[in-house]
Length: 631
Image (tube, rainbow, N blue to C red; front, side):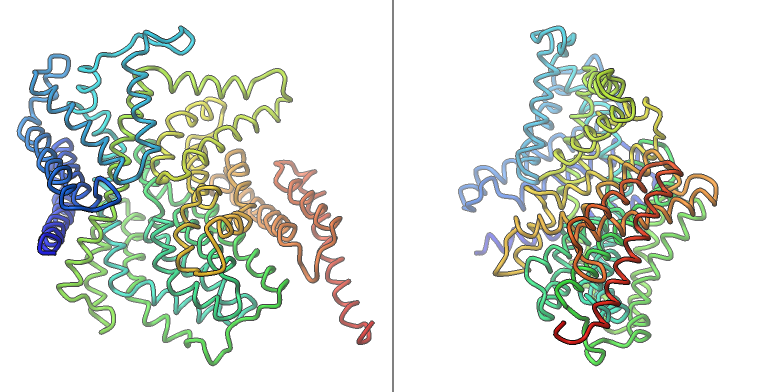
């Protein structure tokens, strides 16, 4: 018991120091990249070994024999790298025995930290690729390569700004961590509850109001937290019980929350960690990434909202009574201090400053404006606890990015990434397919790879791997770099609601309670987001959906996509003004697919089909209402 208390205090102290280091680095920006990333990764390794035990069964033996020795060993590469960081770059290719030994120790420590923090899948992939890099000469010529020595691999990953210290970890250090701290502080200030109250006030009275309020609240909070699972746990604790109290099933309530929380990673201004990686890889501003993702994100939530609305109509679930709803304006006033930092982020980005400055001043503005109301003020204890939570929340992302750096380096030095890209290009140009179909097969291959890799893996890890493999090939096929990377980003996020490993559904299950399970919630959440799986196929060919093009083209595209999503979701739910017959559902799907095509003729036919069906539904509804009772 005494050991646990001291351990918690040590973890608390180290995690606070890590956050203060990040805030200081964001303010001054005077650290060299290698030195800053070394210190940051040292904090991460120590905290992972202290907070994630070696085995599921915690014991004193495990702590003294495994955890504590690894904590001490984690300090070796950090101290050595920090002391020698000026000279390590100069010794690449001529590394000393000490360089090699410390670098190898560092890689092994990252392996174990990866296993503890995010599980086996990405660790197994990393080890396989390292073995492939080391023993490429033993493989058949079709997949073999010249091979690299272990020393060369260690030098690449430990003694340079490639590999472990590459762009993936750099993005976490420079951008993501500051926003994770911001999210932790926002939650401590009561932001989740206030956003939920605003959502209830605005939408709670409508048909399916509680579920719509959950969609809105989760969208707001998810955009700021950048994590689907974390968003489910925070907003879901308010919204899921509220939905169940109004008569929604546990499965439905959990699925709505899982679907809405997942979409938060796409919605600007903060989105998920992958958005910062897109910015770094493409060399564009963060505002450009926000501009490209805002309409796909809005359509994602519109799609979920349509499903919620018509499903609620189908089963006869109404909104909350007016007397149970909070008043709109007082709710908005109470939430205003929490929204000021969002305005600060957008304003700083719009003025052309960096994302790290936007994150830093968002934190400062939150601390200032949270003092305006008694319920949002942070006590010193709450402030320090939030900094600690922020540090602990970043561990999984940081370790994944360190491992992803190794994976990317293996793909690049062996040429494997180019071979896979060439394979995708060959699929797209294959003679046995129709030209248009071949292109969709190539895109489908990339989308499937994103979804499969994203199952059970943090979104940023899946995105980095698939962006390394598939994005170059899609760009070579003529798609714009921004559309290609948002395409990969989008599908990596959708893996959170794709069974069998739907992380958002697993997070919602314990809150939803008895009467359901992760499998049921995952499949229902998947149906809520099904039309969103088509959205990337639209914007990768028609970049007007990414707000790239003439005003007329953008407006036309938004109208067509909006009608298509409505049509597709009506077919999924099977209800409009009344229950849809089988042939009506088929025609709604046909109309949606025609609208998804980039062609004025098919757009006209599809729009005609959808409008005719909607008119038919409204006439049939009128006939039912006018018919005598009992008819």
